[in-house]
Image (cartoon, rainbow, N blue to C red; front, side):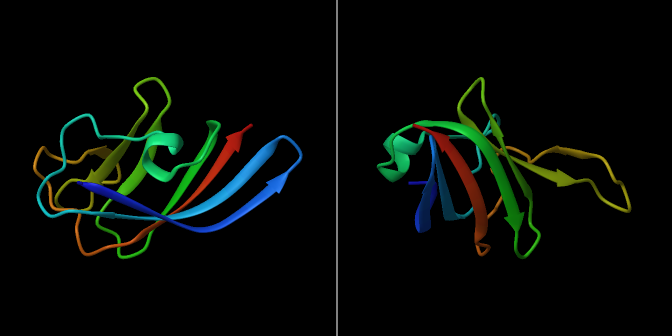
Length: 107
């Protein structure tokens, strides 16, 4: 599988579930539009994603969650000192980095 998630910590607060997940990617297999991701199919967790935040340890890309398409999308800067982010190219290599993410799920 191109995207692998490992639950590191899980906590419940009222009607919300807070989950810390480490994501890793296979080499050179990023598909334009992102990786399909739902908590149930990918991690065995129930609930809908209410909030998604990612920390790019190692800095190959910045991750975001597209709530409409239910995909994790990777963004990168261009060459030079550009500050704008654009989606990573099809076939981009995002391997070798662990992305720690916070998911907040509604129950």
